[in-house]
Length: 196
Picture 1 (cartoon, one colour):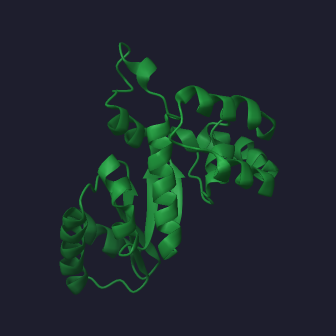
Picture 2 (tube, rainbow, N blue to C red; picture 1 turned 120 degrees about the vertical axis):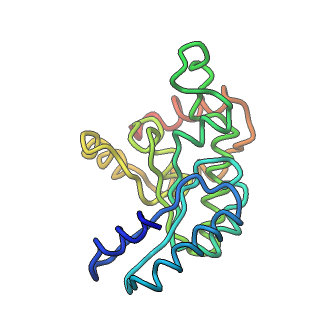
C-alpha cells in the first residue's frame, strides 16, 4: 500500500504504469488489484495502466485469463527461463542447463504472445533475451513488437529490428516450438543468422 500510494502521489496527474511482479495465479492478480483499488480511492489517478510481469511458468500458462483483465504484459525472460528449467543461472555448477532458447521456454513465450494478441493486450519483453542479437529476430518473428533493452545495446538491437521482414514472420510461424534444442539452434544460428 505504501509503495502504491507513493507511486500515485509521484505521478501527480501524469500518465502512470504500474506492473505487478511474480504473479503466478489469477487470485494473486485480483488481490493486488484490490489493494490498488483501495489506494486509488484515497489517491485517484486518472491516467493509469496496470499490468503484470510474466516471469513464472504458471503466469504464462494462464496468460489468456490475465490478458483479459490487465492493461499490459511484460515477459521477464531471466526468471521465466530459470523457473521453467529449474536452473539457477548464477550457479556455475548448473548454469550450462540455463538455455534461453529451450523449446519449453519458447513455447511459453509463444503462448503468452498469442494470448495477448487475442485480447489486444500490449506486450513487451525484458531481460537478457531482449538485448541479445541472436534472440532479437526470433522474438520479432514470434510477434513481439516492444523490447526493453540495455541502453548500451540500443543501436545494435535497432539495426537488427530494421532488418526483420515478413519473410522472418513466416519462417517463425511455421516452426515447431515443441522440437528439440538442437532444432531450435539450427533455426537461430543458421536460418536467422543473416538478420543479426
